[in-house]
Amino acid sequence: MNYLNLIRWKNLLMIAIVQLLIKYALLEPFGVQTSLDTLGITLLILATICIAAAGNIINDIFDVETDSVNKPDKLIVGKSISEKTAYNLFIIFNVIGVGIGFYLSHLVDRNAFFSLFVIISVLLYVYASYLKQTLLIGNIVISVLVALTLIIVGVFELLPSTTSINQQTQLTFFKIIFDYAVFAFIINLLREMTKDLEDINGDHKTGMNTLPIAIGSERATKVVFALSFIPLFVVGQYVVNSLYKNQITVLYFLIFIIAPLLYISIKLFSASTKKDFHHISNVLKFVMLFGMLSLLLYKFTLL
Image (cartoon, rainbow, N blue to C red; front, side):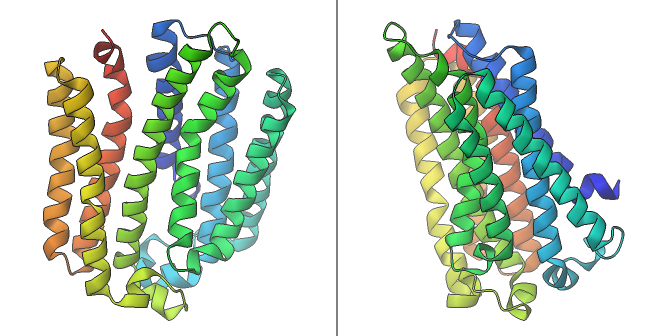
């Protein structure tokens, strides 16, 4: 179980589910021309979660000192698993992920796509070793990488199959994937900033320069509170402009996305303790999950 917790298996499962939903709930039902068969999408998912697992491992390796303060009961590297073993697993997962990415790029006859896997792998290492300590840049970079786990499906599935005849259709569905990626970026950015508020004590001890450390916990909370209205406004506009004809879909968004987002804004207004921020972080993960699961309803919105 320690190894599963090290690679953050729940997060990896969410990545796999989202990529499967894009393939089988968004693209396939509408007969969109795609490039990957069942084996191909399986390999893409495997490559993505291997690289993500490697990123989680290297993050834990560099966070040993911080985690010993912030969450000593959940410390894995140096306690349940040695640092040497963790480094070996980091290398193994990276080699497998990048190797599969190399194969997939040749499979769709787009050799340049291989660079995506290399860039993501390198950025995850740079994030863990350096960017995480910098003001906001680390938060933005990791949120971009989360968004890329969605976009990469569009890149491999749609771009190689695009012709002059189906170009408009491919572009329409790529835009839908991109919109979901933007949603994932915003929610994850809020969650990263909330986690910085939760982990301020350990981060301060290890010399990190997160937003709460730079401007103070109270001011940082107000910033996150103000930013929390962005996804609320964006999703609200989307429901009003695109989903109003389908009552089931509207109800889903109201209950599982808009209501929790409103709850988060209310909680942020008065949040001040580590427990408060941990709770808000978990609710944001809930919003992310149900936002992605809304792909199952997409066929109803296009009827």
